[in-house]
Image (cartoon, rainbow, N blue to C red; front, side):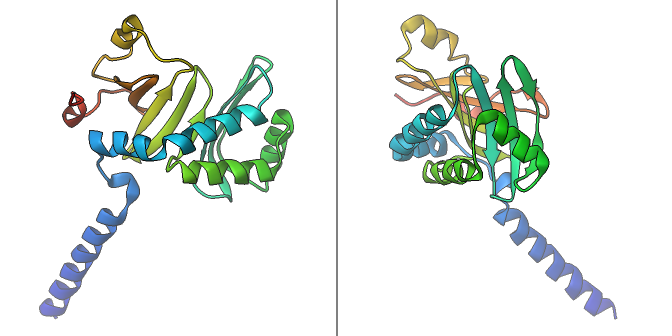
Length: 196
């Protein structure tokens, strides 16, 4: 009997290890992952931004994360000065219908946005305070690209390159690291310096 319990325990531990290794949110990323993804998907990221801007009215802001098309993970909006936090919004709910109505969107706009996010290999987009494109989650933290309308000047580069929450990458792109759960946190040490 003890032998069978030991075999079950070992099999369970092996299964747990494989499960943990397969979980995307448990993966750790490094600077190369972040910069390589941007370089490989720069055009798709630009297309994503252009698409979002094309379907939003002026002075309307969205912060949206879509993992699958049944439930929108995050659907925050600001319209006419009113801000709404919305988490885990069922695509077929009255809540989703009301948000789509406010934005003048349809469910097809959500599908198109999700497709463009997938093509850009990203998980979220926001047009609050320029554009922020979420790259990946790691535990409770998110790696993102903050994309400004124009290339940053030397003063802006120094402001947006604190080597903690923000690392200037190039031109108009700043890498960001943060957590909605724990607030501002610094990039892990492996991110601290971009090689010249």
